[in-house]
Image (cartoon, rainbow, N blue to C red):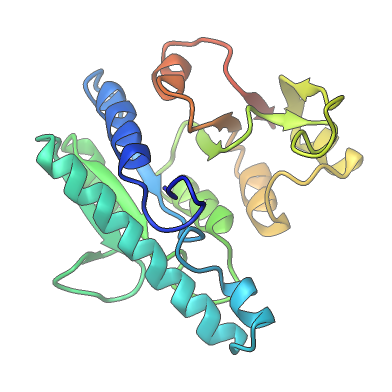
Amino acid sequence: MQDENGSGIGPNRLKNYGHQIKQVHDRGVQLGIVIGGGNIFRGLQGEHEGFDRIAGDQMGMLATVINGLAIYSLLESMKIPVRLFSAIRMEPIAEIYSPQRAVKALENGEVSIYTAGTGNPFFTTDTAAALRGVEINADVLLKGTRVDGIYNADPEKDPAAVMIEKISFDEIYDRGLKIMDLTAFTLCKENLLPVLVFNMNIEDNLIKIIQGEPIGSYIHP
């Protein structure tokens, strides 16, 4: 979501995301989106700067609502049916989240946006995504990042890093690869929810995944 300077909401990036979401929605795919807020505020970063951890995480949750509103507004302008949910009460800005409402929205053909994380401090956006994926009985959790997939080393630091196209949850754990936090990882593993890690910032990657093209890294039970 960030602009070219790595902060705020970049309009070009936002339009790119909207275009990709529309491509998927137009093919009748049910799509639930968990939004992060790191481009605006990170709870852990705030703690390092003197904020109380709980207050910092709450600020981070509010940041995800801002990003969610941006996506929501864009999709509405594109005439895409969309619902905005929040894990904390924020009417009339967003509807309070519940699994039942979320599933109903998806069944009605509405893109569903889930904001405010889990509604609790100490939980990451990855954990919120895993939890929502399990709650709505998703087929796969698509983890959009700024790299192409899972590597045996940090590709932003090691030019010799090699991408892993397919790997099991057990292999990731045994090799100590850092894909998501342990809570999110465990939720997906125990509930047999596969994860696909891919670069969301490359245009048309999302629709290519839906069409079955080999994009990113697939984590299977």
